Length: 146
Image 1 (cartoon, rainbow, N blue to C red):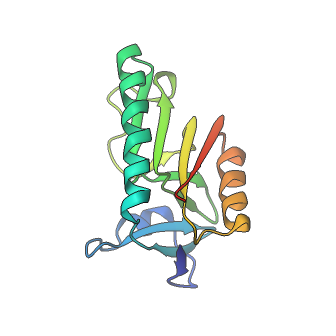
Image 2: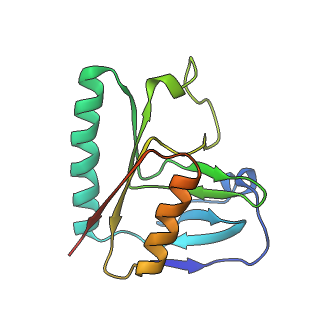
Image 3: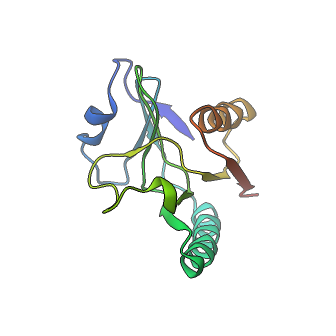
């Protein structure tokens, strides 16, 4: 579930400087900071299984990189949107030599995986899926926790 943290517009660079710890994770939706509640054990288990299998497949074929839930992707600028899918894949062709050195990944992953929690509304899920596709994602995978 996502809760409202601030109404002041923020940039992706400002979001990156927010303090973390004590289980706090954030996303930035059209310039507004959203605090992410910690995932349930079932949610985490599903996310790590999907991410692990995806990483095994991608690594064995040298297709690109797989990223976990802490990875931010800048989907939009002015106002900025930064999302953190539960797992993500970016093809090798889109990763610059030496990788991304700092900040969030610029753009959407090729594949974004979201584990849908019972508290997520259909409208929230639809909005998130639309954001990924509008930013250039080629595939979106959703998995329910219940």
